[in-house]
Length: 319
Image 1 (tube, rainbow, N blue to C red):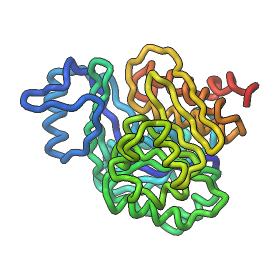
Image 2 (cartoon, one colour):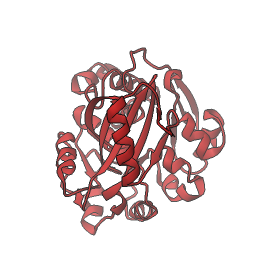
Image 3 (cartoon, helix red, strand yellow):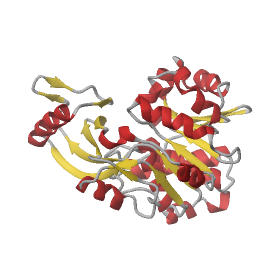
Image 4 (cartoon, one colour):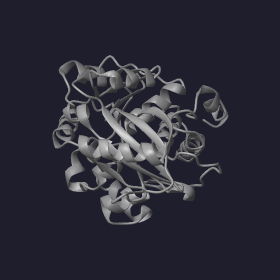
């Protein structure tokens, strides 16, 4: 197995809305918040009246990355939890060729309301079954057959604790990549230390860098290198990405494109970067593949524009 993902699995409902104000409720542009069933239901009711449903898609940061890698021809699998409901069946079908034999099922599936307004993307997440993430001895054996384990985030403290324990059983020759997202970045470096110490490649955006380290991309990346990762990758939207290792600092420009839906752009960048890394490309080429993959992603809604094997062949000569 090339890459096994570990993280949340959701159904994403993608709505274009004229504004992020809904009666007395106002959503912060670019935010990601976790809500209750009641809050999710109330907001969905408001959004359904004022917005336009653009599609339904599988979601979850690590899930997006692993799905994109699968489309590009890599052997991938996933550890996570879905519900015993219609949404769970949809999530399964949305993951394409990803091996889902290690998926567990409990109650109701996770959901994410993705609101697109004036180029901003704001998310309200209902974790549901994702909060019940756990692992078995068979899962550990499965992970130890992978080249990479790619970690995403969960909302529940217990799920984070399970991730930390899981890493203790990984063989040294299994690489770990990690996308903490805003939720984990807010927890701070101390809480994430056991994961950071085991991480080979860390992916985060400028906002997450500030939340996690209190510093900008360049200085924050240097701080993070001292905590364990070999490579720190910071995406900066239209400003491209910064790739920092012990002996290099590489700026990669963003690809020009029309942005329809920025949901998952960083996840697809990570997939492109990992694709290059798996095939022995330089860090600069990894970043170029990631940037091109992200540009494809944001030009369509949901997972419609994710890269495939034909996309990857464009870079075969430089890898």
